[in-house]
Length: 284
Ligand code: GLN
Image (spheres, rainbow, N blue to C red):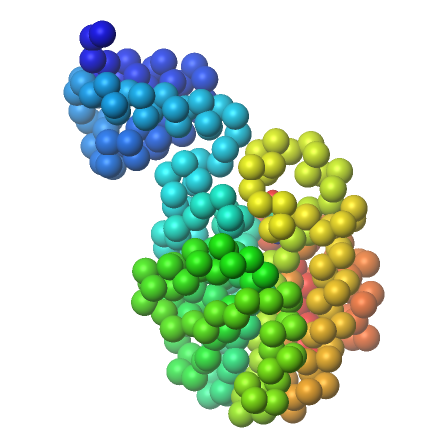
């Protein structure tokens, strides 16, 4: 069989998947940049390279996220390892990071504990710790999934940030340890949560998310089961500490009103960049 040229391989693949995806997949197989690939499109592929490329094209065609196929995803200007055990970081979550960075900028001088719940790839706390200019922050990241924590730890190491990881459900690991972890030395506890929130009916209609871990996306038929469990835990955390407790939560726009109602004081509603109500922020 004649060895295939890059340009030919790409034009065949583009009949099956998006053009950009085809380019990124082939660049991944050849371990070159996309620019390099396009500048050398007369180069021929080895048989093994052709085979690997066509396998990836088939998987992409069957809706496997590109990020899983290339093993990474850019988020907040940083590259994160991802695999099928973690949610692929989403652009709207970058708005959450941006918001937290602004808030903690105003809390300079306070001793702060940052806690990320359902950390997944670790993209939220890692981006925050990597970017903030606050001098006194300690960071914890929690997830129920052992395999997700493995990826998050790998990402923390890659970016050289110091985060303590705990395995467990929502805030339980710190509520359990609250006396010896001692939340009291902190002036402020800042909790970030991008919990699973996709309503079951939406999930059924979106083949593109069905290759991601249901554990990271689903929470009962209306998608609010985990927030309904988490919010009372957050109120309990506030009862256990004299520190201020702030929390930002990412959710579906349809959940803003019912979840706000679980707080005595009305949380602030924040829109994402596409203008949809996406986050609630409270200080207790
Ligand atoms: N925003 C994601 C989606 O719509 C859901 C993320 C989540 O459940 N935390 O696919």
